[in-house]
Length: 240
Image (cartoon, rainbow, N blue to C red; front, side, top):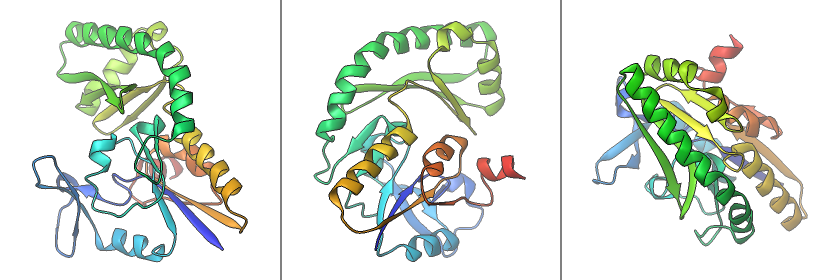
């Protein structure tokens, strides 16, 4: 039997130092570009990972490829980055079939993202709030519009931004991060794409697990056979 785990990373398999009250028995999980430790996995998170040591673990993350490459775990199969906009193959290259999808869809949304970024910057100035707005590029493609700042500022920005400028985008907010995602930046779509590849390449029965903490993970987790969520998470809060 083959077991494939599609797992979110931040706040699922590890936490940033800011969220770790006690680092005893924690393990280094990521490195920053400076070489310093960027995040840690708790004993409980380490135990979860160890349960699936013999499984294929595929990261499904909002991180860009360069940031994903600094995660201190050995991902030997496919990888999903930039909120699902990027699918990396076994050779650590952009999957050729996925490249064709991006080549068709990304040009239709690049200008829309530029326009949305400009609108958000005007709204930020008008509202007099301190947040950072940028377009996240990965593997040469515009993947999504990212806004970082205080959660209260992000909520205000969502409510005050013209809905016409965000039409067609999926809006995802979690803690200090806000993302406006075009249709090809979809964790669920990327996971579904890889599920089909695994089924076509493997004659054995495959069981799929989905790990995640945020509402943006719920979509891809719902198409897995089993779902696992941290008790202290955005999804768990909604379920309470």
